[in-house]
Every structure is written in structure tokens, then in C-alpha cells.
Image (tube, rainbow, N blue to C red; front, top):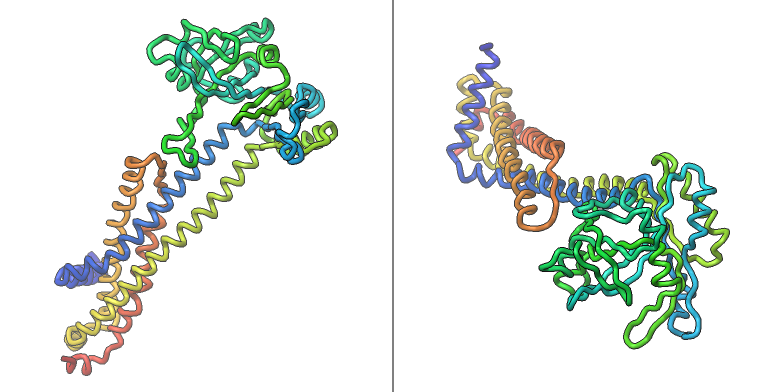
Length: 430
């Protein structure tokens, strides 16, 4: 061992011994660093988890997809319910889908969807659901897992068959004790044979509504062939509520355009808007581009992390100020000790190193404890709530690195102050 290493080891041992003489004060001094490191890791983990869930929800829409939805124009909303003799005519049409397929370059597939709110019944059970009239490619474009049976087929579409696939959650509510694949369900005045049970990938179980504790289930979907939907429900849909009704003529509620690759999505977005704008005089459609939403979510995530990190870093700053305050008080308390050490031949560098080591030990020790607590906190949050948390390596290294830097920065001034004390005046200090 070199003389310098031996001297450094001696200074470290002396610093730790000095801290152990005042255990309670040392622990209280470390609390600021512990809470600061813990808050940095925990807040970034919670923010990372929230961002991950948001990005996954957007990814499920498909980065290669462009979603077009029918929207009731503001002028039609004002007129709704005023006239009983005519139906509100708005939204996407089958021709729109054909035009997009034929005109927009890079389009792989076009998926039309009709969405009808109805009650689905089996025996005495009745559940409010969404009836989705769509094509068999819905399974591949949107992402469905077939749990049992099958999904819709091309033969179902060509023959206008009365068949349906139910989401697992809806099947459990309608058939608590029977096998759904052995029965038919009633929607409106028609019966549909259940051919399969499906689950939308990573779909949450429910969305909490205002004033409701349990929320509204999201997996109450019935999938039927698009041709069957047109034949059984017609083009005019009647909505009844509170003793009144309104009629709407909407051919398609949604068109999902799947591009051949994600590079063509942003170019196709304005082209589709221009194309549809030529044939829609009313503002009765909207475009959702998941790829753009994903990029916005990533940008929001970066800003969110900076904000959370900055807020948590304030805790570390407060902890550093606490360390500096305690070390300055310690210098005053140990003035006579410093004078004795200087009288016995200790140099200013030795005094500086001694107090700096004590500060760094406090900061690094608090940082290590804070890392352990900071990693455990998100884990407990995930266990006790439905919130997802993700602890990243970089957040742990960042928090621990800042704690060490705080120890050096805030410990340097007290150490220099101790080293600058006059030996003679220090020996006279009572």
C-alpha cells in the first residue's frame, strides 16, 4: 500500500469514527439525502410507468394505422331532436373507403366498422353492449386474440350469416353457467349464433365514469359481419333516451386505414384529409394518427421526467444544505480538536480531507439507503394500487450520483473553513 493510500485510509477511518460518536445526529443529517434520493427514484418510476401505459395504449391502435371516425357536425348537434320527420345524415360512407383504397398510395387494407349501441340478451340476462359490424380482417388490423372458437370469416360476410363473436367479459356476464358456443344471443329482433370468444389485446377491464365507483366495462363487444349489420339494422339508426328519440343515417362509424409501413403514414394523413374534404361539405369526420400521438407521448414523457426530476432534486438540495449546516456546526464544536491536530503536525490538506470524508460518507450512506427505499417504494405502490411503475437503471444512477455530488459540493465549504482556522486561536477555544 502506498503512503498516500495508507494516509487516505486513515482519514476515512477517522471520519467514520467521528460520525459514530454522534450516531443520532449523523442519522438525522442523512435523512434529507435519503428522502431526496428516494423521491427521485420513486417519482421517476411512477412517471415512467404512466408514460409506458400511455404509449402502449397508443401502440395498440397501430403505428401503421390511420383511424378515421364519423363525428356529428356542430350544426347537426344543435338541430338534433328538433325534427322528427327526417334523420340526421352525416359521417363516413362506403364510398369513402373505396376512394381511399383506390387513390391513396401505400394503402395496404381498409377496414370499415359500424358501431351500434344495443342490448344483447340470453335467457333472462341482458347487457348493454356495442355491436360492431366489421370484416374478418378486423382481427389482424386491430388485434384480437381468439380465446375459443373462431372469429368472423369471409363466408360469414358473403352469406350475411347471423353469427357473432363475443368478448370474454361479455360472455361471462351473459353465460355465467353455460357454454356460449352452444347457444345464440338476441340483439334487437334477431338471433346470432355464438361462434367464438375473443379478447382485445391488453384491453383494460373498465373505464371509471364520473359518479360511478366500479366503472363501465370496456369489453362488452359483439362482432358481426358487416353485411349482416347493414341488412339487420339498415342505414338509419334510431336512438331513444328519456322518452324522446333521434334518427341518424351513418353508413360507417369508423374506417381504419392500414398503410404498408409506418414511413408512409405521415404522408398519407394530409392526403386522406384532402380527399375526404372534397366529398364532405360538413365537418363530420376526424383523423387519429397513432404514430403522431406516440411521438407526442414520447415528448411529453421527456418533459414529465425533467419536471419530476427537478422537483425531486430540490429534496436533494435541501438535504445538502442540511449537511452543510451540520458540518459547519461540527467545525465550531470541534475547533479545539482541529487546533490539537494542527499543533501535532497535521496540514490544512489533512483537515480538509477529514471533514470532506465525513460529509461524503454521510451523503453516500444516505444515498445507498435512499436507493433501497426508492426501489421498494414503487414496488409497494404497484402492489397496493393498479398503477404501473418502472424503476430504470439510469434513475438509480442519477439519484445516487447526485447524492455523492451533493456530499462533495456542500461539504467542501465546511472542510475549507475548518482548514483555515488559526492553530493558536483554535487551541484557545473553549
